[in-house]
Length: 324
Image (tube, rainbow, N blue to C red; front, top):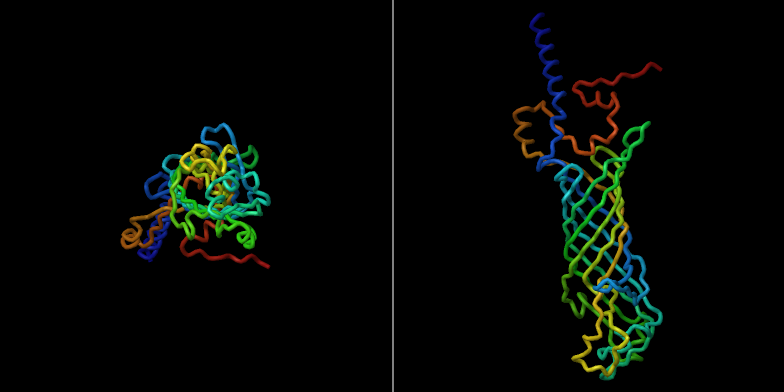
């Protein structure tokens, strides 16, 4: 009988030791505090800014479109992430009367050799993909004296990278081409028939928020601006009003206005926090009862499980029904 009792006591103590080691580390190593984010939302081309930052212009009426991004990041210091992002964003717009667009009205490309641009309604349809690296700073969670920390925090982000825009611009009505001698599309870059793509510098500041749904899953919302070193996202190059149809071709470039394109995105989606565990297989082989769980940085701000939920994770838990 003593042997049986001793065996049971040893087994119970052993189980308690294993349970105590479930949370083994909160340190920030190469394997901990990773996150991946998927977001979708609305995009818009806001304006074009002169490269000397002394003026803005907007030849088209811009409309909202859609986009998505994928981010993966690693917390390298407390509250500081470094990561990479892939984005695809679409833009569209129109102009009912483009008679004040110098590029269309005065450029020799649209007004020579039987071509005669007329200011019929036009549209543009563009997109760009970009790859960027970013740094993100996570502010500490909101809190109050009475309720403590809330499961909500803000962050700011700064990214740089390279963008590959494509653009198409043309008449809104196909019959307009018959009256002008021009062919569809009026302008194309990165699409048929001009499929070559250019790479442009890309800079994006952003701010957003995370709302913690569980220990690992977050709802995220983010607003950002993009400054792109391209002037053709609206399908129209920028020229001064001094350009004329009879301007010598070797002097046309003198009338061009170099600009950056400013766009905006409002995205929402989910963020999943995870850790790698390179020793999992070996540990499970040697210690089948051992369960290792890493805390993340955000575990400090997550409401702890109830006592009953913690008990359900213990071995041999038995649900106790209340008396009816």
